[in-house]
Length: 140
Image (tube, rainbow, N blue to C red; front, side, top):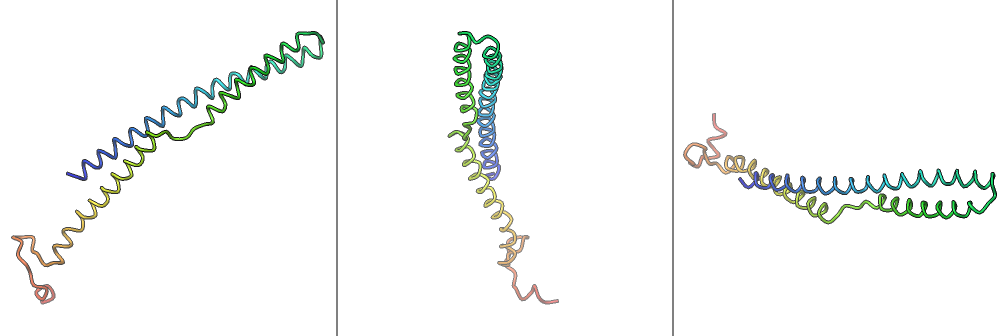
């Protein structure tokens, strides 16, 4: 019964960890998407600024370069937010609970498996709990 409760606890902890990790990865994908959009805007404005610089040589170029700088800063901010991806407190705690529960289950299963072997080695018969003699085991 204890093993089942520990396995259930491990499953709950793993589900919590996976949910937290999926949330983190979703947030990361959203920030990465925004960074990608602004990076495309930076490339488009860089192309436009180069074109205007070569073609017109008028005051529109400083305006385009200011927009280029703003888009570059925004893309950098969202890119850094997307790159920052460390597991949160909930993920770390759920992983620790899962590991502890699985270790306890392993210990419980080892005890459960070792109990019949130990009773046999101690000489208790399965029928009635009588103690057998070691000497009778080796006689023919």
